[in-house]
Length: 193
Image (tube, rainbow, N blue to C red; front, side, top):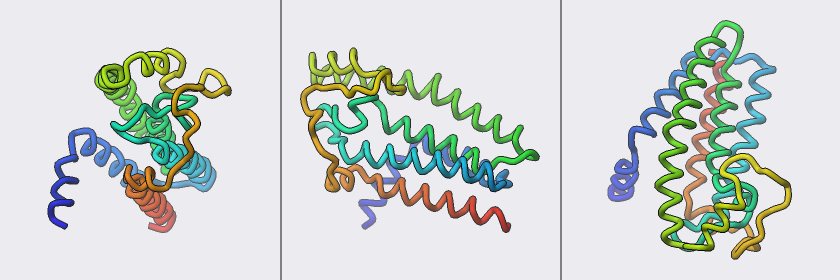
């Protein structure tokens, strides 16, 4: 039990601390209004569905994942996370805190777009190119990073794989889903607190 906890604590980095601080600030400033809360909840649900769909296909370091949402974008996990982030900000917003939450959301978006995305693109792209060679090069050339260019999916090696509960479990997405549910419950409680 302690070795498992120790492994998880070692995975905590500045990115996690930054996200925790931003999310804590959003919760502190939250003054939900029904219309924004419902719109934000919709974004959170769509974002988590995308993440669940993606993690049921992602076999890290085993094969190049080109099935499921990876047929449309190279980074569906980031797309899902971005939608969840927007959704939580929308769920918490009202007229009295819109300035502060917009500033926090702007900081998140700027950090995501100008630090995290280029960093991950450089590191992950180089690693995948080294590991999968021309297969990855073709995939990289034909599939956009975040916004689908077309509705026709990429057809490459492995694109016919189905979503797998075992692969989903291996990727620990259930922990993220539980965190999202907890965040939604906390923001729901902010209606009365």
